Image (cartoon, rainbow, N blue to C red):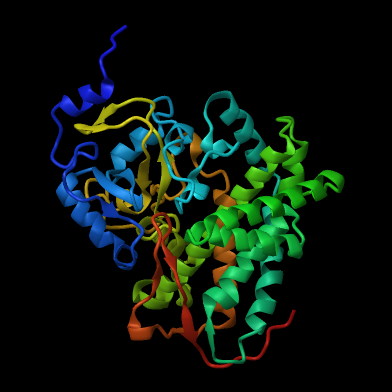
Length: 417
């Protein structure tokens, strides 16, 4: 067996300019307000300079490679043998106070596992989601949406994120998991701290404690909810394993769903192509949702893998055990694959590809469409009230998230409950 240093071999090989392993240029920080304000400009600049793979920073001094090419992303996502999702080798060299470590560190769940562990976890989480009665969920969303709309419909103005979208998706996820409100509130606080990177360690602690409370409750009093199905599945997960899968449902069910609904409402209210058509009945909210999943997916940069060894992709050597981040937003808009017409086209990467593709797509579509339709049916004359006519985006390397969504409308009478 050769004892040659693979890293030395990698850096000695010919590479295109700006290869992530040897680039002299500063890495592009994905966590700044400047990036959040216009990420598509940065994607275009990176694509022009580096091609399909660009050197970036996920946090200060946390390097990664961002995948900008659609075909390159599909290749990586369909090759878990060379690109596993397990971050344990990477995180050994990451400081404990790194703001994104709690969000990316290894946990015993499908999205961070490979091999037999992945199969075991994936079967359990898929079964628990497939158990959800989508027909009954329509009524659940309506039952949550109507009181929220009634709480501000007479005011003539609202921030749709804080007054409608966030509380709606929060209550929907609590329902799906069978979580009582008091535990759910602690989960929300911990999840927010993790995603914002502010006091992430405290957020991780809050989240872990709340999730274990829920798992203990459902172990003693099972019901027909995702948490109970996970506990009862033949995968025989212990309480810690179940708590981490419940954590993931919270993280994606709240953050992903909130951003999907809010970004779609922004599109409908800002873009005459969709606003007039959706409100007029020519296009459905599903068409607007799919447009957002292409252009501004709620999780813009994620699906992170860590190569087992240095590997040559698109004439660029990727180092072993360093994050390779798929930019769903950039890949969806790759000029090599992007066509002009998006209506009815669902070939985007917002749900992922391969064995780690999101198992809750139907559920997420249903909640997003119902939440949007309930609001637009009740208040069809919504108008944006953005400061300086420009939306404010929350900074962060992974999400595409509005800070607020202020609107005005003619005051309306409360809906019948």
